[in-house]
Image 1 (cartoon, rainbow, N blue to C red):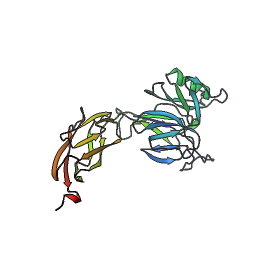
Image 2 (image 1 turned 45 degrees about the horizontal axis):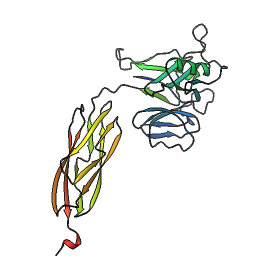
Image 3 (image 1 turned 90 degrees about the horizontal axis):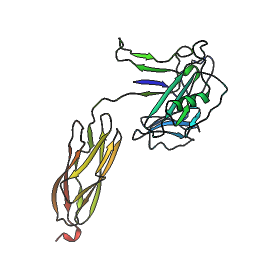
Length: 292
């Protein structure tokens, strides 16, 4: 588990000990909007946990964003280094590889003569590229540049340890980004556990079935059924924690009135509780012209 600072913020007023921060740029935590976009670039994780870097103007749509933090500017774009070569300060940089497979989180210590003076924003882009990034952001730097990790072998309840040497004492910042490994085995969940549709003879109906992975990692699953009068769409998918909505269609075109039962089976492969079933009880009611 590791974490480092993220967004610049306002107000920035001496003596810099205010508790609250605002105007962070786009900030999203677990799909909940914390702060709206203000035109600065953002580092995002989408609903399927795929990473990305995007522009975030005011009113930006977050429907597909699970996590977002924002920075000052892009310093690496499509493999081309940007930024400027003027001011040298402690820096925090976020990078993303060309295939979106690797996220790079970097801090550069500074303002410590004889140890490290810091870096320019151009150098942040160059270092990110050196380590394998294709696109990169310059995040909040200066005295906010801090990276820490959770040392499982440290003693005591607080096992957080600094990995860099900040230019001053630790301070409150507007936002942080943390990364951790979820070692829980994949686990299927579905809502509801039973479907009880009531459909008039000769008609069709659709009900939603929610499928979710409540464990760690990615879960691939497949949905099958044992009745010809129902179909599940889509009949397979993958979940990294988000909820997928499957549509269960009931077709009573060739059916008589009465009660019918079936089972939908969700097979999650390596999931600890796979397979899961959904009980289906269909009631087919008569049409008006069926009645005597």
